[in-house]
Length: 127
Image (tube, rainbow, N blue to C red; front, side):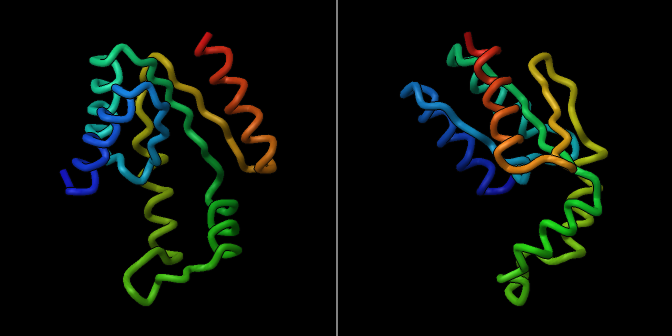
């Protein structure tokens, strides 16, 4: 487990204990979903709901969106096109199966449409 993931666990536990909501980026998860399981355990231990909302898109869309944003830190070892492709493959092959899990295919959706669909999922499941 990396220091970033460990720090995320500590921060998540603290924020949830103070009754704040937490959104966890998929970049913190590994192929075995050990990190997501740890986050889920933290939430359940504190009596908080835990809802998975996966935002997916086909590879062509993911590459197009990344290309549009650019790769400003590529020279320092940051994100580049090859890493985008590998990350897409890794996440596509490692989706977990948890009780409160929802997948939104964002391939043909605007940001507003994605936001509204995720908001609806949360409103229905947090009643």
